[in-house]
Image (cartoon, rainbow, N blue to C red; front, side):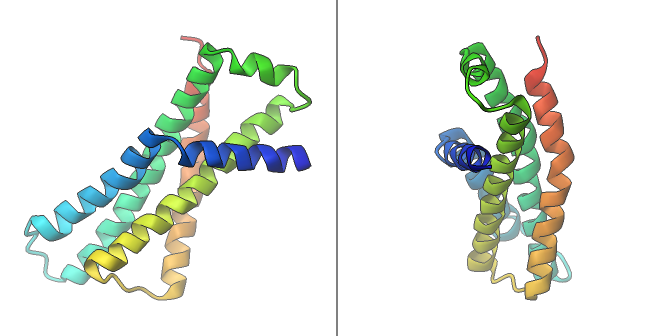
Length: 159
């Protein structure tokens, strides 16, 4: 269990240190959010509702894109650089390795959701009840699981 916990921690730290992840999964959704809620005049009847709806959309965009692209690309890079050969000689099983990757990615997703939600609160004063914030974050994380599996399958393809 200690090996699994340490591997999850290492995967989360690796994810948050990745500049491409930071740009594409954190900054781009926030930039899109600013563009579509502040720059472009949407003419929505209820602008506050639109701001909250689009905030959830950008959080989902961040999590889904990173599930497929970041997870898959990292697996391909690790395999091409021989990293997985080193993993095979450690006491870490394949199941533990991939599970830790998925949990580390999910923890990074949770961090992304918090950052994007905070941006929405600061930029447009989006206010929801605590249960709405938590439920929406939970649903987004739950919905990312099939995409994490898809990213893993893409990363494990031979060509």
